[in-house]
Length: 355
Image 1: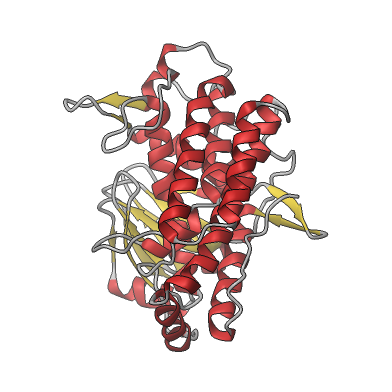
Image 2: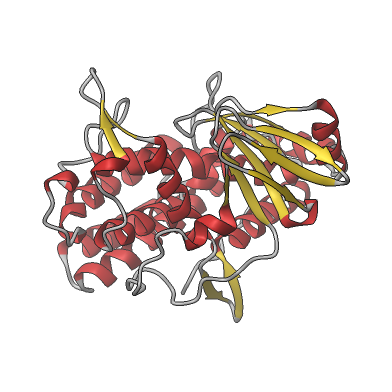
């Protein structure tokens, strides 16, 4: 069992790298990640009790923003009912971090929001309005991190800036995907330049998936999947259907809206966190294993460390329009804006992010 408040302190680097703010906020409500397959969750005396071979602890419900079950933990029905009444979503994730589904309460405006969501999702022109903002936010975050790591006048920064300008003029979702895909390829092509450690474990020759072919890709894939689960939980909490998106293509078992919401966060949250953690020596050989298919995956120890890295990043604060937000809070603000915009017809719901 892992509680993210503990994770935030796990392997915290002595010095904070430039891509992370120096302020990591101790948030009052945090997600509970349960990795142990032998874990059992129940309600006892109004508290959530989590037991396994390695832990036995009680948590107040007002401390928890989400319960994420990674694998085979057992949960009693009274526990699920109590969590639902308390408005604490329970998210089901595979052992490799992929979002499988979730349980939420029915206290919000699901019906009205989802009718509006389905109506907009059926209109390519309206989808394009939302998708442009998602891609613009991703490209802005990519350019910002590229400038910090390599300087303001590099070919990579110029290419991403051109992609950002082109994305604003995209006339179709397919053309927008092409622009975003080319910029992503350029970003990953330059990724090795941002890895400061001369370690064969972290050799990176480009983005690979299904399966990831090296340790860096294993970290990226796992944390992209975890971020999708977090986004899906936020979407459902505000009445949205995590499976119906505006940019990513829908297909069975795919949380298309969650993937839409994660798109601007891939670089700003996951890539920045992975670079910082690797460069600070937070991962080693014990965190990875090679499979018979040639792929590389995280061990249970590696997953624990990776969850600590992303939770620390999500608790990192930045200034947006004169106010201080953590990345976790920014996801909630973005989803809330999107839900409101779908109801009112104002589809411009930009993600809060540093200037």
